[in-house]
Length: 316
Image (cartoon, rainbow, N blue to C red; front, side, top):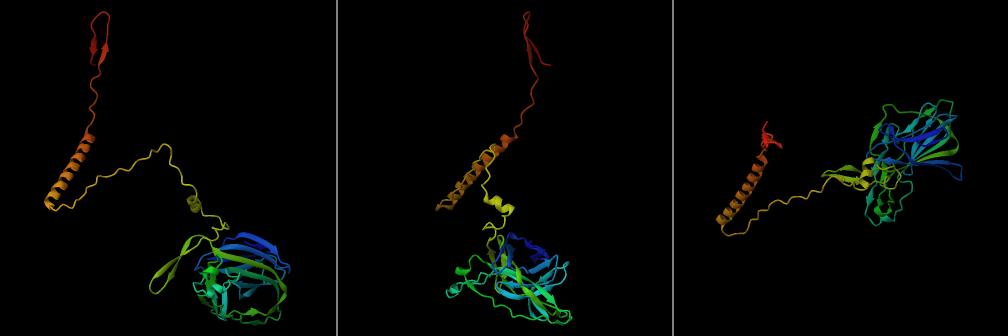
């Protein structure tokens, strides 16, 4: 999990934080600390952004940016809790969930002139301190317009295969109110999660006429960011040699019966019947040889010689 001092953040799918790879911390000239890492994305999966502060000297405001679009924030006021952001609020009572999706591509030459922003395929969490008003006044959460999903050319995708879509909507039974407050200072910490497909998988795209299976390329493993799977590494290794005690067995070539283009069907049938009889005789001969059993040994013959008399044969 990316951590800086008492602050931590993660991307959660199906209730579990995703694995993070190559976690790096850097400082910008303006004093902002950036903690960046890579995470595996799977098309069709919803995700949430979680963050916490174990000390919490002040309330903190976490602002979430997805693919360069600001998707709102959440104020954390308790150190034993975590804040989460699961989507973009498009109305006071509904939220569009974050979901990993394939990048929208086209072969249009005009689209190839559009440069892909470096923020595509990246989730950012900006942290700053927040002052909560003591008046206790609240307001309904503000709605934000959905970002327009851009379409890029295959030439401009730069190894990025996933983006975030907002297809699924959940509704609040009771509108949630937020406390009125204001920021303290500027953003001082950012978490950057760069998401890419982890391994080879498939995605089913349902259409009216058919189901299209789209392969998802192996990005993180192919570039050495994530470790290779155990079964994959064994396949990539050298082919195991056969044990020395195992002899190579040459395949037996079966007898071939050729059917000629004879004009006389009767003659052809007689020729084939003769060949079948020959094969049956060969099979019967082999079966008879296998049935032969060795007779038990006869009486043991013991011969003794004597210098004083004839040779005595003992049949006991």
